[in-house]
Image 1 (cartoon, rainbow, N blue to C red):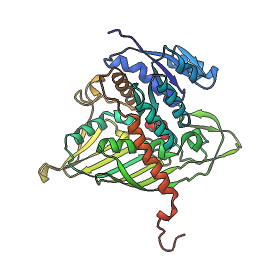
Image 2: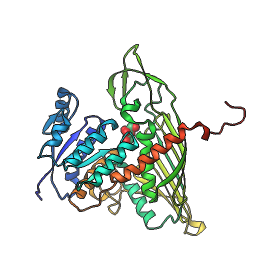
Image 3: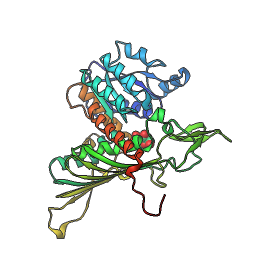
Image 4: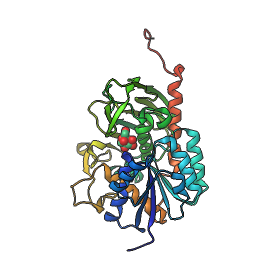
Length: 391
Ligand code: SOE
């Protein structure tokens, strides 16, 4: 079907920029979309590098001025893949100009910015979606279906860990993700935000309070010479830059309806590359998930006779599972990039009015409130009870 294309402009050329470019290109090839997609312009900081990235990633044009791009009549969507310090300015300007917005997570670097963004979304008729991409993992979307059907019953426990190790080497160079002004926070906002969103979305309830501690293990890092993946190569005998964010976050939480949560986020868990894990235990059953085995969901059904009970490993690759039917025959499995393709699909369907927008900026604001509460709790030493004999 040929339709009026949805004309996209994307801001940001880093890891997420590459991932979203791939997703916009792939979505119409595997899913039946209500609108065609046109990758119109890519916006970056420097002309030469942005021109190169535009060619490599399949964009028609490139620019270094996002304000000019937002002012164009021939752009429908602004896709924000920049560090958090620019999210609020870009998203608010784009919504005011009537553009649909997809904004990477966490929504903003501060609660005040997130509130302003959510208010701008409420005042606009356009779609404003936040990129909590893990909602688009087939196994987690399936877990949500089970929870919504009541298969877990009343939820008592949420145990969420997001463990990575790309910063565990103290010689790994400094990046913008270690700068509070650019990233807002460290492991907490970068990956802990995913756990918070996933937990609130799966449980269908918001976190009411937290008790937290944050830790920075490596106080300064050498200046980077060249980027490789999330990290890179340090300049020899480099000047050191102060790390102004947390390396790790740990907190307990209570949900409004009484479930108890335990959360951990770190980019220093040696050996764990992208272990985004969650286990939820309810009165009638439980689910357990680990992104390092993203095609599987463990499900425990406590209503079965005791003799038949036990966690079952479900391969979430069947055509009846969320998103999975559009891909490969049973069992062949999906990867990280598929989440972003699913996100692009859901975004286009929301723009066409065929699907709810989710997560909305309000959902992302609910995550930001938890991030702010975690930081507040961690900053309050009086809440940290010293064990006798320690100081
Ligand atoms: C780095 O920690 C990172 O790329 C995050 O920024 C993403 O949100 C996460 O999906 C993977 O890890």
